[in-house]
Image 1: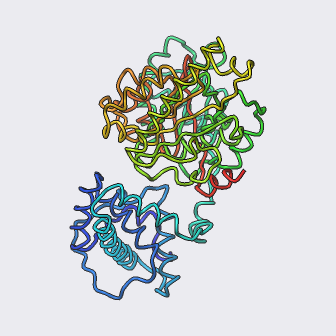
Image 2: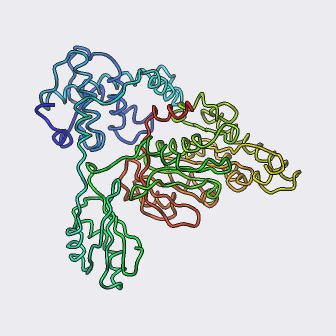
Length: 508
């Protein structure tokens, strides 16, 4: 883009056509989406998967929305690169200014909204069929590696972290804290400062002053975090950095972390990400027997779940581990469809199939307990020493909130699994984008001791996941808080895994 910048785009506003605007409002209602921007992204993506735009006049009389609703700072370069590449691929002159870019985006939105409406009608206005159509179409697209050259170059120009020790010292002084910075470690997304307090009685004042500290350091909406240090009078302050300085860990780093773990068929080690200073974070599902993963849409929940499942697959064989995958919305687990690790050799897709699989898991649990009783042992580890070898079963429900809303009676069966299944070698990973008290009863949460919270919109949602606030202040894009049974909460950053990465590990 020669004459416009990403900053210009992010400060602009965009309109679609009157026709597409009306379709967008209708699709918001039938799909349960809260913003026009969510539909717009689906529509633009739908159009970009097709050939050249039609030579037709498209008005610009729909209601306008800001670019900050349509894109994020993290993905705007990708969207711009895709629109540019589409234009060049089909012989349209390269975008030379904002007016031309607005026109191309408007035409994609216009075309895509019409196509989505046709998809909705052809699916007999059934939500599950409609989503299945979108997923199949995405799976059938040819695999394209890499982003357009302009985007790749721009995203690869990562800035080096800057030592803000002096700025931090001045900011602490501004809020009345007399302190000295003793050292700094630059982690993947935050910089960790060791700070010596001259008066330890100021610790409560510092804890209450984190919000003004963020303001004094120009951290915008991001919050520093405070924790105890390793020496007397020392505290640790983790300061968020600009996205341009972030270092994302991916498939290579995850596999390196897993290779460092000894192979042991009795363990259920999972690695969701790296900690604040970049060290791999890992824990054993056997000692944290069930796990709740929650976060707002687009904040990395699905990628986190993939990292957990890949961790298990990489360290086991189908003889020692089976995955019971329950996908009520039919969108998440298609990449595992041919896996040798599938329990019952299938994925439960849709509400009815998920209910059946939960009931089958309860039956399997009861049968295992009967066999344990016959052997006079209390768990499958003891049973293995007496010749009874059964694989661990990790049951992963992608969107528990949807499943519970569809079938209230099913919650009691899931609660029973959470209460009893551990000794039988059955462990749960429950994931949701909508954590609330109505869909996650206190009885269920009390029996799921391990929690991972990604960015949420409200502190009440953080309370549901973690039993404490904090997740509302995360940085997004896989930033998470991990809380395990009997331990303090830990900040971590999830591994970034594409579907191609997952597929490559699945071929083991």
